[in-house]
Image 1 (spheres, helix red, strand yellow):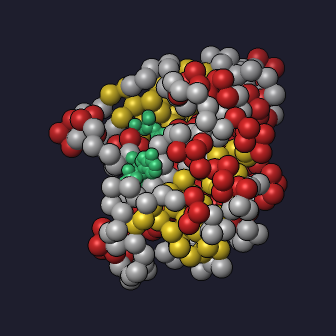
Image 2 (cartoon, rainbow, N blue to C red; image 1 turned 60 degrees about the vertical axis):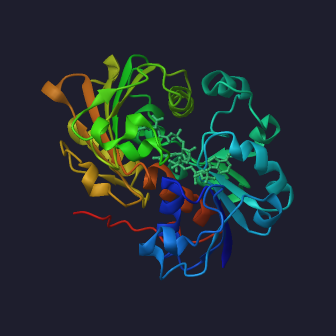
Length: 349
Ligand SMILES: NC(=O)C1=CN([C@@H]2O[C@H](COP(=O)(O)OP(=O)(O)OC[C@H]3O[C@@H](n4cnc5c(N)ncnc54)[C@H](OP(=O)(O)O)[C@@H]3O)[C@@H](O)[C@H]2O)C=CC1
Ligand SMILES: CC(=O)N[C@@H](CCC(=O)OP(=O)(O)O)C(=O)O
């Protein structure tokens, strides 16, 4: 049994961890923290989890209590894991951080995008970027995991097969992405109010979103050269889900590739991946089909049989984009079957 701590248990990704771990046969949540709701029973805040966590109570975050766990998830805003991870790691506790604290390899770049000094640059050499489809072997040995962001997960899974084989032009890629409102977290913000979001859609942080360097870092690693991408996120009137539409150009010398060959490339790349579903050619995956499930569905299109490829990818931002991917990492770290406790069927057909 793996004994777990969750820092930030009252947020959207924190409760999603609780939901997924409730049916995990090898995991037990021992500690769950909240500063504002310390003392409250989980069962009182989340009635649907009453049967699974009858006695578990939110407590103040405390390094000594958390260090008694085998692994601690950080489901907190950026900066929190910076402050606590070193103490936990030196006590032998593994850390899986859902925030962006350890995602960028360069501390100075992190500081530029996040507007504050990096709080634990000395830990960066041991941090593993936890995208299992790319780094499974490193994850097995890791003590500190940076769980990829929601948009970066969808964009990278959609483009990696093409970049690894050097089939597309690495400059001028367009990532047109939409997110549900839960991506903004559970804390009160005018921009997340029902009246502001329920019948409206808007782009935001055009060309300057903090996921830009993370996406570029991952794609450039896959391509083994610098990738140039324009990433435009949008807020859409749904609770969960990321829909990514990627526009890429085949290199001139690759334009003879047939649609069947492109489809086969994706199917082969992901044939042993339990959390990626390559759909039939010209499918249009819906976010509802991944709701609650730790899966990324991908489909390919080639309008007018030209050099333009359109890759579509959908995930649930709270599952494959955060908590599900975190549990997937935990399973790999503890030598468990990778999909243990993860519901692939999802909540909707
Ligand atoms: N929502 C999403 O779709 C995704 C989120 N993420 C990332 O996961 C992390 C959590 O996101 P989300 O669940 O949406 O956030 P929420 O705002 O919903 O929840 C944040 C949680 O952290 C706790 N918290 C806040 N400040 C501190 C602090 N200084 N010390 C300890 N605990 C603190 C809060 O409880 P309290 O204040 O009571 O302590 C709360 O439980 C973020 O870094 C986010 O960027 C990643 C991918 C997707
Ligand atoms: C809709 C919305 O606001 N989404 C969030 C991204 C999700 C998130 O929490 O970011 P991390 O993956 O970096 O942790 C945003 O754009 O800031």
